[in-house]
Structures are given as C-alpha cells and as structure tokens.
Picture (cartoon, rainbow, N blue to C red):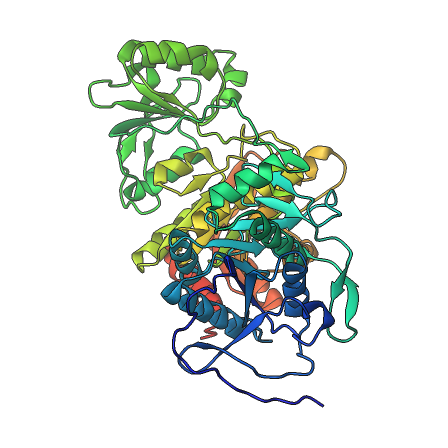
Length: 623
C-alpha cells in the first residue's frame, strides 16, 4: 500500500539562500528518490515536485516510488559527498517519453530562472536533437552551472550529453572504482566512468545489481563536488579530472588537407558522358553557367547536338577540346576519362590539364588521377585544381556511437549499376524545391558539390576505395548528422550500383561499401530503381532485403527504360530505349505485383507522380 501525504512548503524564495554550512548545491533531474532508504540517513535529498505553475519543495511521503532509478543516482552522490552539499531531486519521471521530455524542460526552465545550482546531474537523454533543450542547457551553462549528463545506454549519441557545453559521460570497463575516470578527447564523450555491473541502492529490493551510463554520471558529479568548494566551470572540471584520469583517449591526428571548392562563373564540360548529361539537364539548379560542351576526337561525339531533359530544342553542339574557348570560361569541369584513354591509348586527361595551365583555366575534376602531379603547377599560376574528396580517418573516439536523425530520410537505391539513380535524385530535388521544401542532401557523385548539395561522400566510379564497412558507415552517419543539424524538411541520399548482391561469384559483386553507406544513412523510405528485365523474384528479394537491412519501406519503383544488347551482368554497355508499349506493360506488372507506384526514371512527365508518392508516405496521406 502506498500512502501519499502532499505538503508543499510555504513559498517564500524558490531556493532560498545557501546555509553557511552548505557550500555546493546539486540538482538531480531523475525519478523521485526513496528518501526512507537507509543510505540517506546522513545525507537526505530534498524532493522537488512540479505543480501547475512551478516547482516546489515537497514533503510528500511515498513509501516506495514506482521507479527506483532516481534512488540509485541520488544515493551515489549522497554516499560520495558530505552533507554540506545539498542534493535537490527534481522528480521528472514519466512513462511517456514525450511527457518526460516536457518535464525535463520545465525543470530546466525553473533552474534557469532561479539559478543557485553549481552542478546539474541528468542521468537521462534523448536520441534526437531538441532545440529547446539545447537552448536551455546553453543558457544554464552560461549562467555558471555545470551540467553532467549520461549518454544513452543503447550506445547512441544522445542529448544533452552530446552538447559541447555539457559534460557527456559514458561507461568504461577500465573504471571499477568510484574515482576511476577516463578522459576522451576530440569527441562528444568527455569522460567515461564506473557504469559497469555494481551494487546500487534500490527500492524493492533495497539493493540490486545493475549497470549503465546512468550510474557513471553521478560518480562524476560527486567527484567534482567533493574537490571544489564552489561550482567549477566545465573547463576547470575537465582539466582537474584529466590530471587524475586513469587513461586518456587522445585526439586523433590527421595530416590530410581537405581543399575547399572554388567559385565557378562560366564553365566548359569535358568529356560528354552521363555525368555531364545530368549537369546539362539540371543546369538551372547550378550557380554557374555552362558555356560549352567538349569532347575528344576519339569519342565520335564531335558536332553532335545535345539537349537536356527539360529542353525542347538542342542547347549545345559538342566541340573539340582542342578548340576550348578560354576567353569565355574560367573553369573546365573535367569528368572521368580513363575508359576513353584506354581505348585511344592517349593521355587525354594529362593533355587537358596541360591545356588548362596554358590557357589559365581552373579545373574541377571528378577523380584525382594526376592531380598531385599538377597541383604545384596550378598553384604557382594562381589557379585552382580541385577534386571532391573526404577525410576518411576513422572516428576512433566515438566508441561506435551513432547519431540519430530527426529529419525524414529518403534514399534512392538500385538493383544494378547504370539505372539513372542520380538523375532521379536530381528530379526529386528540383520538384521538392519547387514546392518550397527545404531539401538536405548527401551526394555520392563527385558532381554533387556543383549543385550545392550539402555534403559529398564520393563512392562512385573512381571514388573512395575504402573497404572497411564500419568506417564507411560511421563517416556517412557523421555527414548525415551535419545535414540534419540544418533542420531540413527532408534529406535525400542515393546509393551506388546495386545495394544487395545479384550473384556471389566475385568480390566485385558484393557491395560492401554500399551496405555501409546505406546503413550510415539509415533511411526511412527507399525508391528502388529496377531494370525492365529484372526478374520479379529478384526485385522481391531486393525489397525484402533492403527493408530488413534498414527497417525502412520501399515506397516506389523507378524503372530504367532502356534495354541492353548484352545480357551479361558484369558488362552491359550498349543500350537502347525500349518501346513505350514495353515500358507501360512492365510498369503495370510491377505495380500490380508489388502494390506500390512505379515511374519511369528520367521522364519529366512522371515527376509529379514520384514526388506525390514520397510526400504521401511521409505525411501519412494515402490519397
């Protein structure tokens, strides 16, 4: 039987002045501590409960609180500090996460308004950023209070622990005693402490064996409180613990210099290939002008008239790279050329770089072949030579913790290579922006930066060759977090090639990089690009596999409307546009079989159907 006797103390001053014997005051935001527990005989927490308008000290007598967590946390602090240190326990517990978050924010508002706390212990957290929580913690920290918060027990990055103005606490197997601590540099995790299996004050029974980051944080709080007579700053506290730490995980070092892209005004494209076709089709999304399109005489493209997806008439005639007009352009956008070089036996890219040096042109290259050789020469002439790259130094001091996204994530994946997956992403980007959605995007193509796409992780042709799936996963997650911090309405991301193996005869058929990439992106919805000749059973396997891999939904199919003269799965180069009748028949079959929309990739007439499918999924509108 639980007896409730609620008595609120007369409201004179929310906290009052500290007694002369009290030299520090700690706020513990947690469930209500069981103050009848024997461990509190010499050091009793003061319970604060929320009323309709504020928080008040309470003498409510509860024989046994429903949640023993706060008892364990307060007991650690009480046991390892003197009675001169006041412990104010704010009862914020609630079974519903949303209400619990509101109670935490309410308690922090009270603390911000009335101050008086040297340390605030929060053995709790949420896995997605909360702007109100962040703002309150920032203001409280600036007010002079030190905030100590535990990281999520499931292993994720969580808040407020990850905020830079909060001491974030994790668990280390190195720490087996109350005063064992590990310092972590270059990480949201500041300290690791004693969170392993241990005996804790509880409610029923009065002691139990448990573990978790929740119990590492109060050891940090108690240690700091016992060694300072006044509340220290975060810098002072970390510096003090650093001097006495059992181990230090040092900041990672990197000699990699990431060059920033330069400003482009007028550009020439070379050579004419699928990446350049996308630049032509979606040039209205670029912040520079495409003046001309060039190719080599070995390509057979010279003199060809080309137009983009949205053009009625041709807009460029392909000219010879030897005739590039340096008076009207400032930059050559230099695409992949290695295959053409292999056929012609000529050093086409090297010749193009020499020509740019002679004519005073900057170069935006899709791969880094020859770049290190030519970079000093370009810099000596005050020219820019740039290739999108990314620092793949492993994130060693995160201990596997991943950021969770608050923005919805839509991914374009495929059953094979050469399916127009990036074109589909650009179509989505264009149409969503036209509807005034704020679009965040992670690109895997080197052209991504040319469209102002937020981040690029070049995994495509001649891209990053990193084979460590876990490193790719972590790097992708970090980039997604940077985009998510901008609070877009949606984040677009696309994979390369096939996302699952089509066969198991060669390591090249097993897309480890793509698996790490898509797991790091952790999409909510997938548009799966398929071929006209893909077997129904294989598409079904891809749908089931992707949905199981990422706990997401495949919401639409993007049908690539080309057929290949060669059916060999490794080399499928010669393609031709399929008849409208065949495409319509295949789409009808796919839609009836999988009960999801199917659209033709690269067809502007189908963009509304595609975008509506995405919006309907994320808004829950089935109409």
